[in-house]
Image (cartoon, rainbow, N blue to C red; front, side):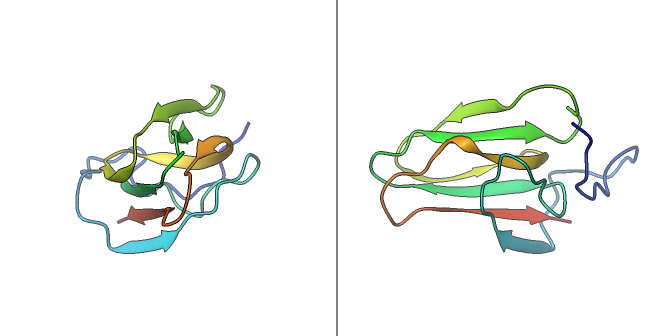
Length: 102
């Protein structure tokens, strides 16, 4: 599965934990990478939500990783290139995912 997300931190010494300079809402997809590799994901999980599934930036051939989350809002400091639709369950509104990157 080739990587298509822009990854400005690849092969650099830049700190991925730096504050995001860009952000946008994420629509999970099993087939499309995000436009850019993330620095952070801000996730709001509503009642009935169980978490998200992601593919990390440097894992072109591995499968998704499911991250269990309870109800609430979380900021996850991680570099992902895709948020999967399968196994991403955000529950009742309000819910959503916002990606930030440098």
